Length: 87
Image (cartoon, rainbow, N blue to C red; front, side, top):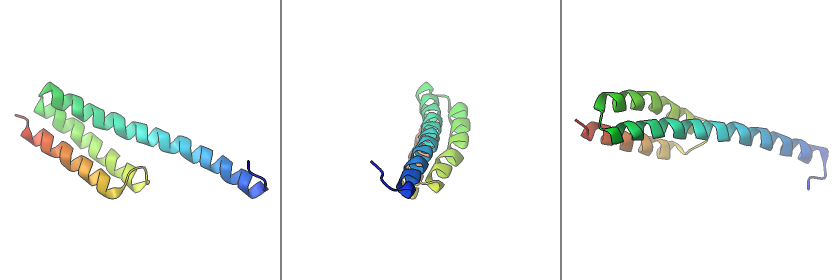
């Protein structure tokens, strides 16, 4: 348990930050899922549109520290490859 007032404040800040990060992570995963669903359906135009929407969301998550920069790049790259294989 936090003893000092500064430690208590830090705990409050961490809780707020955690909520924001959870929301951002969830939002990123939703966009990724939409691309994967479009790929599974086999429709290249839908998949391409979903990828275009998901890419900035993934990179924003990397910028905010939700995922590592290289992990975000790898995710975008692999999704792009899968979309390119369609059609």
